[in-house]
Image (tube, rainbow, N blue to C red; front, side, top):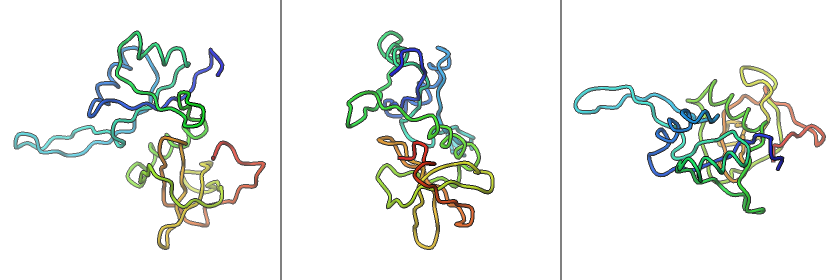
Length: 179
């Protein structure tokens, strides 16, 4: 890894501490991504709009490797970086996968379903129409529906339902960090 280049690192937090961790990262001016949504909860006989994370105990940190380590070691933030199974290094999410994931989560968060296990994946595709134009992933089918799966190796898979006519099959030379 280049010492001065920033990467996206996937990190776990203690149970129910992801929002607190987010606040600490904001105070330290660390770039992060945490998909959240507002839900109505009844607290003490009152209905309240409460912000909840869409993925429990998972946050993405954008920093250099040294800065990411300093957050944990020197600032005492309780983050547990995920590791790549092959290299045993901190897991780095490629920029293209992270951009695609953030775009899908910002545009259509209610239509995304998450999988930690591998889905039956097919050919690499690119969405060529609609709000998600440019997103690359792999095609999967469940029932009579077509989904595009965006995988973050070792972290999670996010899938979104897309009409088949919106997809274009990618050839080998066009594939950008899909696998």
